[in-house]
Amino acid sequence: MHPEQPRLTSTPTATATAAAVPAQTRGQIRRWTPDGPLNLGLILGPLRRGPADPAFRVTPDGAIWRASRTPAGPGTIRVAAVSGGTVEAEAWGPGGDWLLDGLPALLGADDDPAAFTARHRVVHEANRRNPGLRLTRTRLVLESLIPAILEQKVTSDEAYRAWRLLLRRHGEPAPGPLADRMHVAPDPRAWALIPSWEWHRAGVDNKRASTAMRAVRHARRLEEAVTLPPADALARLQLIPGIGPWTAAETLQRATGDPDAVTVGDLHLPNIVGYALTGAHRSTDAEMLDLLTPYAGQRHRAARLILLAGRRPPRRAPRMTPGNIAAL
Image (tube, rainbow, N blue to C red; front, top):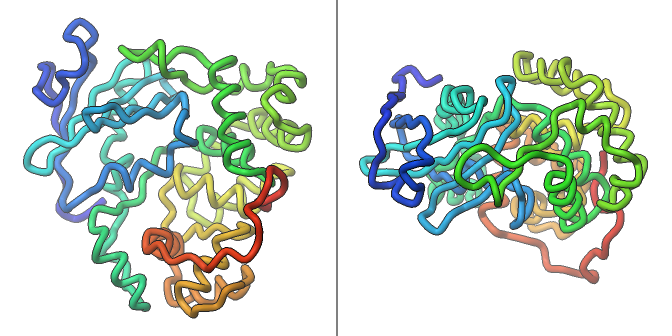
């Protein structure tokens, strides 16, 4: 947490920014004032698994809604910016208080952007243009691990479809006013009870389904990763067969806000980093890690900023068709 603690307050009354929610469905409301600029879209965007994610919605009033399976049970949280740089959150369900208690961490209060020093012009410019970027910390491992497993070696569209179908069929309606449009992911037991043909129907091959089943059997131990040092957390996740560096990093970037959990084994990221920093059209993981060495401790943030810079190598081959694109 930053030395100057942001303010977290509670109020039982409705506010003008929450007018989109009918009064009879009001949840518990809290407000939080960060100690610097923040951009809700940049912070929470990585938690969205495709435009039709049943656990994530952006409503016309600009509010972001998330449905989560917390240690206290299912919960829904609505987050919106209000005047004076303050953020207002409203939550429903048994997990609502847990989500509200974690609002500062969710919005990057445990992150320290000041610890980052740009070493390249493109990174410096991206950092300057995105002062509201903070790294989220959901404190929920399985919530990010299962969709990361689904994304192994397939296109994003395939993984998003699988996540959408599995949540709608085997999750439960989210608490609160959007119960007809949002779903909470299954709990570990419900994941374990999904029959093989349902995984197949969602387009998930046996390898990924088996990895997910191994993960949910050890859910309690995996959730402990949020309390471990970063290296130990990465090692804990990779004890599960089928979970490699790619899946572990993608999970911990979201669950723990690890600023150094750089994604290794991705089809595109090494080329994007290499092109942005050197102009090279093709780069390996090893070359990417070498280029990110000056950002040791902050390599994930550096990679996020490079992606935000929008510099991509020219496409030299047809767009990848559904199939293998991501490593474990």
